[in-house]
Length: 254
Image (cartoon, rainbow, N blue to C red; front, side, top):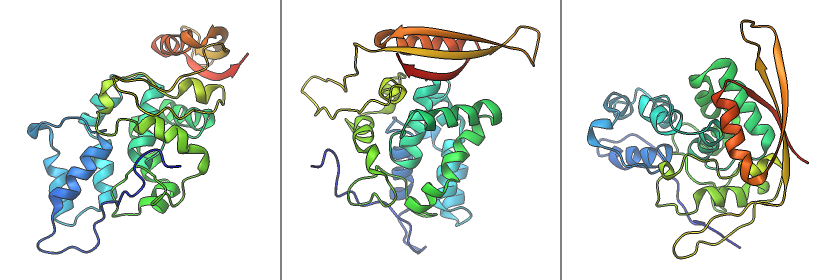
């Protein structure tokens, strides 16, 4: 059974020609990487566009410049929770949802240890990106017709991120899959209903959140804390931990 676009034809730059319609390619990159966010003419990355048109960079290079831009950072890093940021990075650069909590944790570690640019590069420089899109295919939703290296485990979660494909990812800064990933729960497919609706979580569950935080005045001493919260409290607790400088070690179902 198919739940979203199944006949999507990826946008590809095959051979450079004088009449090549780069506007189509550039629009496709902006739509995918910026999560369908409305883009003002003044916000376009003119230098990056010129490099692509002139053959100085590939589509992968253009995708990288968009992801490293102040615009992307302002849309999805500065205004979103860390989990939502990583969730959207997977969607925008790999065309899928995060596979599991381990993948989220790995990217949290990359950002915390190496910074924003390294986090963006970790997707674009991955073997998965190259296998799926190469140098000259615009990243896109991984569907039945173009999945290539996508694992089956990700279909429902990817669908949950792509529901309402025409809407912008800036509509919410809350992670959609955090509770399912944290407890390794299956993500049910919920077909869109008129007037909205979303993918439900399991509200009867409780979760144990283990955190660590550097002691004040010391770079080498850490304090550990454990919290037990309900499903409805989980996202708020995570945001509070991150806001106060803590790091999440693990989230497990009680």
